[in-house]
Length: 193
Image (cartoon, rainbow, N blue to C red):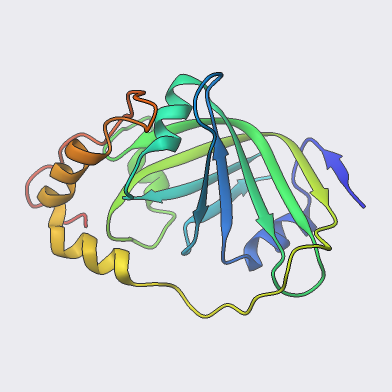
């Protein structure tokens, strides 16, 4: 059954590598709890106590608003194929915006660990404090049918300037009115989708 530790094991890392979907949970002390599904090849395990994930443009920006105010985060992975298992990572997160440089922990270095994805908005860096597994025996099985391409097409059509206008219009506040950080404008012709 369930086990708890303060770091990922090789088995945990192998399990994460096979997952096509994970969920991100955040909240402040008095905000609406936000749980977002994340797909694509947008998560990297840096070591047994640190993961990063690339956040793409969406209709909201709840995670960034919450992390800015209250940096706790939970990531959850469920086995939809094979033996049942649920894996949760609890920790403290920080947000790295496009263009934000902090040496080896800045945008350029971390974004370079991912294949470029249209609409990339932020990278979240989770310092893991607790790892917990549970059985997952009630989670149904599903077959993976592939990644959706609609967000890529939408972001490419908008282009960098269109995405920045969208962020200004739709991503500056959470549903509870919290300020949400958005990336600084991209330099003209930088080639980033």
